[in-house]
Image (cartoon, rainbow, N blue to C red; front, side):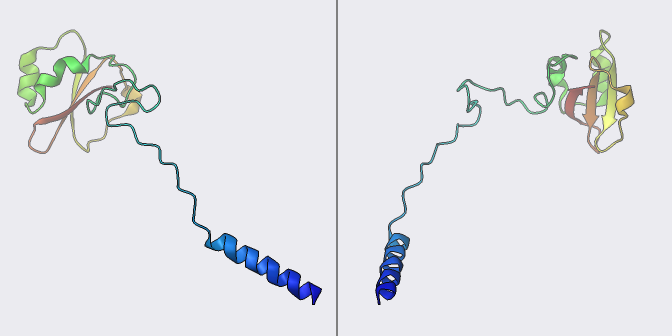
Length: 118
């Protein structure tokens, strides 16, 4: 009977522990977009220029050409660095990678939709 009493006491203890109210979880609020969660400093969210390290080809200088055509790139007469027109989904060889070259990606209508280095 002593064994039965110990078993009943253990079962009752486990039942009470299982029914106890759960401890509230500590929720850490997420940093708002544009704020680094570690440093708390603002982060540049400009699409297309943050995937790679530095802007070695100065692609940011040519953002005014977004939505334009290849003719606008030619009219801009970019002579201080190499340029390349790439159709979206087109194959680009990484063997020819040049971090100082400006790549202009065009959509099916010929409009520039992305500008990057490479």
